[in-house]
Length: 115
Image (cartoon, rainbow, N blue to C red; front, side, top):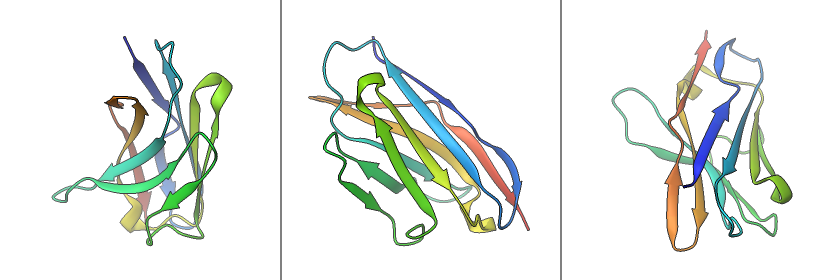
């Protein structure tokens, strides 16, 4: 059974940095797309960034230039380096992985940016 373990969230001041990590275990198959989504209170879950096994990345416009997604294919781990954090980045961040034909979600990790 596939499990996703997220870590690295917390409280940070505006302008600061945090790095989220997510490790996928329990699969014998290659992980295709790995990514991060977030959901702020009262808002819908939205894409933050994704990365394919080939290293192709995609970012939400709101985080371009501030966030960097990376991965380790050998260990099925994905990271999200978040810099110049803003109060609007406050949300629960969810790890997401595609292991064809299924999609899996982490339990979510809180990121709070204080102004």
